[in-house]
Image (tube, rainbow, N blue to C red; front, side, top):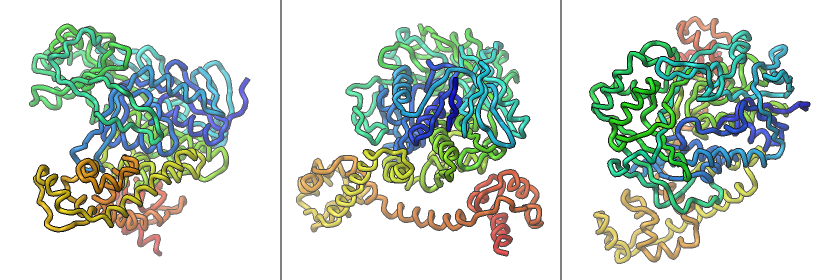
Length: 620
């Protein structure tokens, strides 16, 4: 019934979809196995993509030829560029999406991807022999062989759903858990552990009074995520902001004795930066309110996602507390919030390619590695799909450096440091964030991906055109001089100092309160010189001019760090022989087996003196 595949991807969440698309687009015969074809790319929690640092990841996925940015743009109901008041390194795109349309567009793209087959079944066992994974066995008893396997099981591995004192097996509400794989891998020497996550109740939007809330409209200028020309929405749906209050907190506290978290029925650690509402009012008892975001789930539905109210308290407690929120006095629940506990495998058991250390040809991506978030899962899926394909074709793996992409930061953090709580990406995790901006992801990554055979020629042509325009715009600003009569009236409105003689346009642009698009609107000379260029190229040139000093400093730092990255540590290196290393350092180095001195320096518990000892010993 089944042919032998190059790549089998298990699970069709965000990681699985990107993995299957990447492998198939690179030319591998690929099979995507999911327990339910109707939930491909399901937005299990918030129907939104992007946000702080996450938006950078989606743009990187797009530049690499992945699908997440395209699907997001095709299903956007609201777009906002976050952190506009800060520097460009902090700007982060975010989209609210139509949940059902997101799933449909993902499925449509996958079904139109050559080399990709689908099968609906549960995978309960891996085919393993002599330390090599060579396929899977499904719940219906089919043994399907492949050259590599990617596991993207999400929250389904021995998943347990908790609502108050009730709990039952499940990977999501109304979907059964996946069993068998954890136990098999543990028998092969893998370490596993438990994590938890949660989701808020879904509300009937017709029952809410929006006049008591603060409206949050989208941006007038919808930038979007994909670097391709995808039509942006002509209209947008507003989100709304409201708050909990002391009456809400008092009701929630009455359910604490039946909370699975406080009663100890949940062992797994939850996400630090997205705590449940009961956790928030317990940890931050001094606060009398917490912000809530009232977010629509699509164009043609009344269902509302209550962001900030994740909970696993008893249904009746949730319902009573909801009705104490401003605007929610008559709220009706579509379904209660719940927590889910699931198995994951600490990611220090992986190579940088996301292939497991213990079994060849087996790759992990997404929440199985201890991450949280669609974007974190999707980028791992992309890289696992690329490397599963390259493994099947006997090619060397692809690894992105920390200085090349947020994706590289994320994977390096996971493999080098591991995680004991759900890992979420932040801009603060990237030491080179001035280089790793969302606006230049295409300039950073498209050529690399095109060389692999993943990014299309259309993408490559667009990047080359954009780079050419940026260079030309920078030349114009360097050679164009502006007269005081052209700019001083404008400067007065900006409350910035006038000029007394002609000044180079580039120097004027360096003023912190001067923006290039404003300059074009006000100064005819500049508008005439730049009107033939795309706004995207103009803004990119502006960023490069304004932040040139900082960009060059980071490039110098990258060069210094590269020296450590180029000092490779042999796989067989024996840390036991280095008596001057402390016990903790020796144990962690033996466990992680860093590939380079750079990676060794980033392992939690390894200090600079340990790195110096390694350098001296390797020099000998």
